[in-house]
Length: 388
Image (cartoon, rainbow, N blue to C red; front, side, top):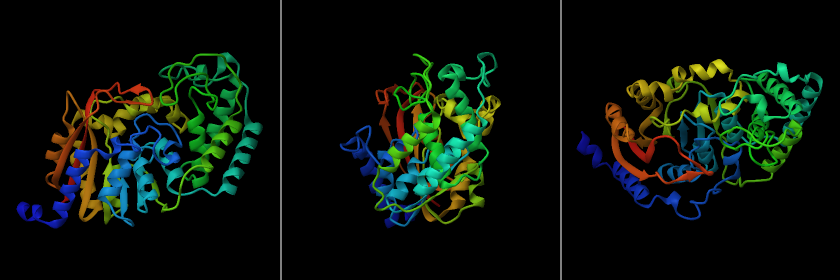
């Protein structure tokens, strides 16, 4: 049976493309190697741990066809499904993180401009009517933070507006419209950074390092509006096809979808820095409370798989149920000194998938946005699988 599959034209073509991909690593060739390559909306909201858009571009371009449905069950801020939509595929992004869902939803359908500016007016009125000025000794979340305490990042009046704007959006969850998700994503982006666009004191746009500099009042709606206007002016949408954002557990996806053409995803790397540590402030803005951070390892695959990689047997079973006959599953993984993920996951996948090809890329010296990967990842890996 295995030999007959390996002689199948689909299998042969898939393997040849996988080999070519790993031999050329096209995303490392100009212009794709540029830090800012890709549609500007890939940067709609900063996110530590985001897959490089050029990788998503080439995986989708090489291994899927126009009109295909492409699912990412752990989509983060939607890089893979958004790139699929840009290339005329139907991109579907699922995530269990509220922040990831918000940003993915904003990207997978184009917002109506009139509705966007109506929401900004509603937000401004909401802040004006409910904003409370706090004294330093009674600031909410004064004991919460990872790199620094939350109120340390903002002028007190700005902080008050942030707290009120947070309530505005959380009151509309989980049924955010595309336009609300877009405005919320812009809010998430400007929350912290090291340039004038940011609401915070001087910090970092990806990870909110302990802030420095003066406390300067910054109007929240004004800064969100600037980001909204800038984003609406950018990007080529000629081949864009609307997709779908889903908020939920990946292990429930086979109850929601079937007959998917391809699944392309980048699961959490074994032993890497927890996603919620670097993204803690934006996760808080999306609705996380201090207690949620303490329970994250119990909830997300990232923590579960470090107890046992066997949790991925359930993952492969779900993917098998979702994919159509001869459907492809492509995983972008990380190898560390403690775990060869491609080798280990290949074993777990075998009851459900044929292992077509495995490839490695050394990334020990790579940096992203000036931040060196402080996890234990030494190589990025690609695992190409075909449904049995």
